[in-house]
Structure formats: C-alpha cells, structure tokens
Image: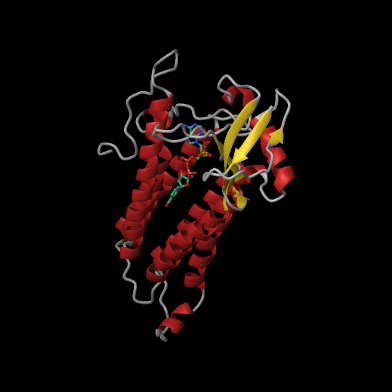
Length: 310
Ligand SMILES: NC(=O)c1ccc[n+]([C@@H]2O[C@H](COP(=O)([O-])OP(=O)(O)OC[C@H]3O[C@@H](n4cnc5c(N)ncnc54)[C@H](OP(=O)(O)O)[C@@H]3O)[C@@H](O)[C@H]2O)c1
C-alpha cells in the first residue's frame, strides 16, 4: 500500500510517499513518518483523512490502533492522509506536575517569609489561626492533585503540547500568588470562628468527595488507559455528569467561606466558568457516544455540573 502524506495546504510532507504492507496500522505509518522526518515523533503527529470538497464539519482523525485499510474507501492500494505537526509534546503528568507545583510552593512563601516588607509593610505581622489553617488546606489540595496525577488518573492521551505547560502554569501560579497575597496580608481581617469552621469543614468534605469521584473515574478504564469513555456512575455521578468538577467548585467555595477574600472568589468564578465549559463538552460527548441506537446504551438524564442550575 502506498500512503501519500500531505500538509493541510496540500504540499507533500514525505517526498514520494511511504510504502507499507497491507496489514499496516496507523501506528506503523506514524513510525515510518518519524523514521523519514526524524523530527516528528508519533505523539507529535495528527493524521486525518482529506476533507471531501463541499463537505462541512471536522475531518476524521486516524486512530493509531486501527489498520490503514480501515480508512481506505475501496482503493486499498493508495491512501492519502493529512499531516499536522502538534508541536513539541510533554507527558500529561509533567504538565499537571508543573502547574500544581507552583501554587504549592508559592502560597507558603507568603505565609512563612517576610515578603510584605517588599510591598511597603514594615510592622510585625500577626498570624490568625484561619491563615494557618488556610495554608494547610491549600497545600493539602495541591498535594492531593499531584498525587492523583501520578497514582489515580488514567489519562487517554499520553502527551500534551509544551505550550500548554506555559499557559496552565501562568494560570495556576498567578492565581496562587494573588490569593496567597491577600489571605496572608498583614491587614487581613479574619471571619468569625463559626464561619471559619463551616467553611473549612464543608471544603474538606468536598475534597474527600472529589477524591472519591476521581477513584470512580479511574475504575472506568483499565490500567493502560484503554477503555475509552464510559458512563460514569455511583455516588454523585448518578445525578451529575461531572461530579468531580462539582465537588472541586464546592471545595473552593468552602475555602472562600472560611477565608473571605475577593481574590479567592475571583478564582472561584473563573475556575467554575472554565470547568462549566469543559463539563458541557463532556456531557455532549457522552450523550453522543451513548445515543441508545444500534445496541448502545442511552446516556441517562443528568445535570451537567451544578444542579439544579446546569
Ligand atoms: N480549579 C480549576 O481551575 C480546575 C480546573 C480543571 C480541573 N480541576 C481539577 O482537576 C481534576 C482533573 O481535571 P481533568 O479536567 O483532567 O478531569 P477529567 O477530564 O474530568 O477526568 C479525570 C480523569 O478521568 C478520566 N475520565 C473522565 N471522564 C471519563 C469517562 N466518562 N470515562 C472514562 N474516563 C474518564 C479522564 O480521562 P481523559 O484523559 O480522557 O480526559 C482523566 O484521566 C478535576 O476533577 C478537578 O478536581 C481544577
């Protein structure tokens, strides 16, 4: 079989194409492209079928495990694929590790070190119990996320573009510093004892629930990340599609009830908006995958992220 590899503009990426045996898989083709170009290792490549003239929509992405003949429309001797360079890739675990390490390190700096003298506050800083508990709560949260990244999540994609590391780090590190600055500030005014206890208590229950949601998601896949997308069920997943995001949002609400800063609430709103966007996409994908047709189960009626609103 001869495979012609072209760019999205139609330029030939591999001069003269690639000859492969008839049983070759997409993964074999990716290896062959890597061998010829040296630069584009398989996870950097996105291969799609050419779009038919006049047909709108997204192109079909070639799955590495499938055979190339599965994508040949009648003509099994020739196949044309469109190549896109996804850019330098890093492991998903590397991406998550760096984005979470920032807030884990930055926040305690504001608590432990006399950084406020560089912002013009010379006097002695009184540390309230709520600021100490907030620091432990914060560190617990980000340590949990790093541990989950390495020991709980079973990602479907091994890698992510390097550019995402810079984007995500900018988001988490900046918000980490912004919230740490205000919660540990020498002029910070603590909330009353009861409000603090309710906030941290509620937040901790949500953190434990969030961890349990991640265990339930983990069990939907086998250890090598195979198994695709399944209908999540059990615990809060029986009523809401993205119960892990619901509990994530509520645990930040608990932190904010206890610490009460504008910075914390700004982060809560931004994070909730981001997660709502993702949750809507995940809900749509599950409804499409489980449409109740041709023997497939029908996705049950569920809230998306924040019952009873969405
Ligand atoms: N504060 C914030 O701004 C913020 C933002 C985002 C996330 N978070 C936190 O970080 C956690 C992880 O985020 P995430 O966006 O990576 O979560 P996620 O996509 O919902 O899922 C976590 C893991 O479960 C897998 N998974 C999800 N739905 C599945 C299904 N139906 N069937 C099989 N596997 C499924 C995912 O696989 P894939 O690899 O295929 O996706 C991923 O490995 C969140 O739960 C939340 O606690 C916080």
